[in-house]
Image (cartoon, rainbow, N blue to C red; front, side, top):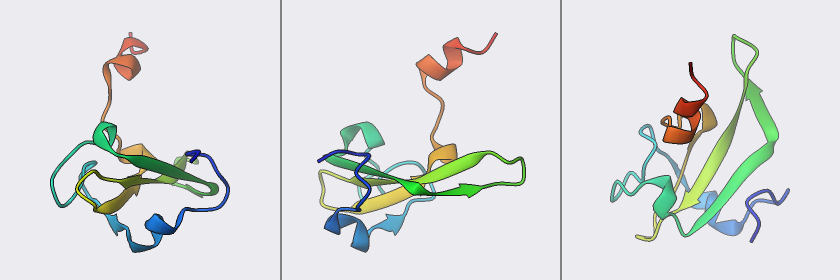
Length: 83
C-alpha cells in the first residue's frame, strides 16, 4: 500500500478524528501506525492560504484515526530549519 494512492483504502471509512495527533484509543503516535494514507486529492486551504491534508493512520491497536497535516507536532528535522 502506498500512502499517496489516489483511492482511499477501505480502513479509512471508519476512522475517527483525533484532536491530538495520536491514536484516540491507545495514544500511540503516528510513527507506530501500521498503515498510512494521505488524502492529497482534497486539500483544504486555511485563512493564510496554506494547504492542509487529512492524514489517516491505522493503529496497531486496530483503531483508524485521522488528523490534519498542520496539527502534526514539530520534529527535530523541522526544528533544524528554524534559525
